Length: 149
Image (tube, rainbow, N blue to C red; front, side):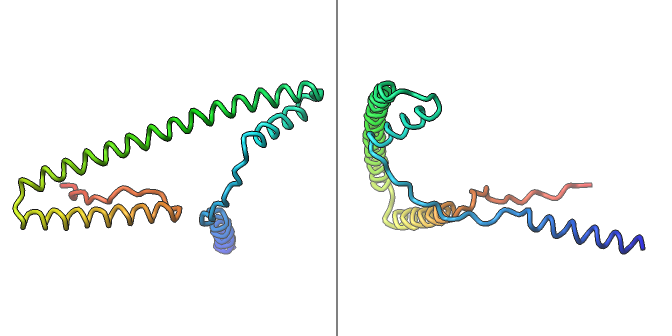
């Protein structure tokens, strides 16, 4: 009887654990980009329902939200342009550095280096492909030396 009870409890535990597993990550749906005016209206409408605003208050809040959103969008575009400029600058520096290294190497060494770079690009592309699939980044496994006893 005792064995039967343990078997049933173990089976229930097993089934419960299997249902507790998270399902695979689903594809994200694309967000609809709202204009600044639409976002301001949405924000004002939310405050109107929360705070029971009058029509005059809602209009003023909508204008304040619109000003804030436009200012924020301007800063975001400025930051984006700065990031792109830095990226291009860094890219040109890396290219110049690679050209300097290539000038020092023999033709045989250049081909080895080019092959090594291509291999690295392939590995990076694989990692990026894995990340886009929803799998988290995993650190490379290292083998530890067996403990001496």
